[in-house]
Length: 420
Image (cartoon, rainbow, N blue to C red; front, side):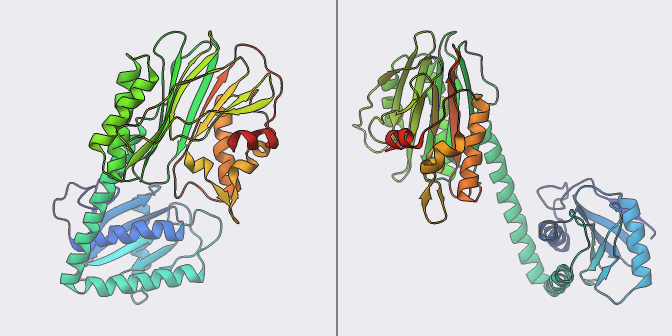
């Protein structure tokens, strides 16, 4: 080995590199390495390119190893064997590769992959080795055709660009969800959302317009996608500005409905629950626009009440009217609101989650809001047997903690009556 160039990038592609026109072979090499990281469940992969006796580093994936030690090991293995496409080096330390995969010589350039040890204990199986051999052979054939390799690399680069923009949009969307909220005397609250991987979907927020009140919003824009993401952001921004200056929740929701009617596509709608809680007045005021599932667990009365829905979802009709409701919210009461990703969850055989909800949550009155939110989402995943794949799952919890409450457990009978 006469020279070594280590590029200061994690992934060699037009998006993650300062190189304006990387060679197609390097783009494909990085993609192969990225896929193998998941398929083999390995700690790391180093993509290398050999020009005669020179080696250059094209990409480093996963937990960064000792690159110099890795290259020395590759050079030694290549000197010992020049015929095998895939070399198995057996049990290695975390710093050294367990597999060296040679993709093939392309116009004097030979791409290689130095594959680190598995994350789990044990060696790679023969099935793993066969997959690596087949993949290297396929990529080698692809790279032998310049026009085909250029077309494939262009498609990979475009896919990476779209994925990067999608991840950026998701990150921006997540920033609309509150992390740390203001303290409100007499109340404890928390919200959590599990994303299904799509743009748009669920949103929630908490506002503190004065020292004695808490405002909570929870909603969903559907169907998910870029338009839904933009509308969700617009709804949240509008809600924040209106709720800080307007007392009438019904008027605010009517204005939001008008905005949705005017700007949203015909097949995009939003559900919304907007609630104001004053613990000193023991008062819960709310407007629900198609947000069906919200309950209040009564700590003193040992029962469950359902909050009524007020008319249709936002954006369905310009003439929709949204009624305002007021209920008592006493010390020991707990408001639990969640979106359809929780309400519509089902186990194999279409057994509804809401039927098992009380048994799986137990005592919520004497449990912190953060823990109740975690219990709800954990229970949904345990009951349905899968993570949030098709729908976002969002839950908000508000507890009145003015006085100590009895140990109250949700009863299936009372909950079923409230949810009906």
